[in-house]
Length: 228
Image 1 (cartoon, helix red, strand yellow):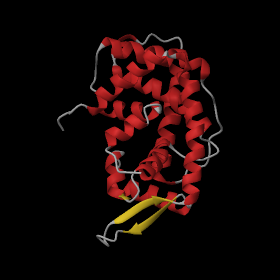
Image 2: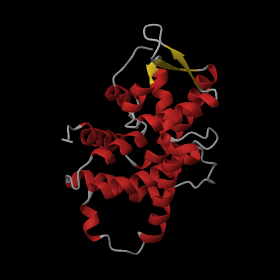
Image 3: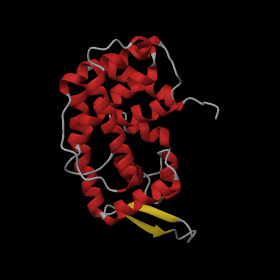
């Protein structure tokens, strides 16, 4: 496969709402258009009936631990505090609805991916490496907004599981190129099927037009140029 830019990668993964929600929630401002809040809120409320629970699997390393623990904390807080409480000002906050929608999404994602024991970041990294064979750790880390140390830990774990391999670049021996192993390719292919089923199940409450609008608006949030 040829190399693609990260925005193009996201377009390829338009069906993967977890990617859009993660990056939008990082880039959004404190408030936003009422229409965005409304669509996300509807998605969150309707999806509560379809949540799937899964037994917590062993957590390995800082990136998996922080990602899973954050989601676990969010799920627990949501289950014990939202029902029966008036949300008041929170109803108008885009970030609040993004967070609640992401918690709902992550629960179903975790159940769907239990057999693979892959986090969202690991899955995204595998897709990027498969789409851009020979990409460096720095390239992938930048695309996923990860610091170098965390990315290195993820690469070590994926390498230990024989899902990816590192090679020295023939052009620059200091550059480490990443590629999927045959086992990694097979795992990614099977994981794609699981994620497709997860996405169809989770987003079944949205019409095709609503889904397209939601993805479009989320991309506008995380692709905007926000001053540092």
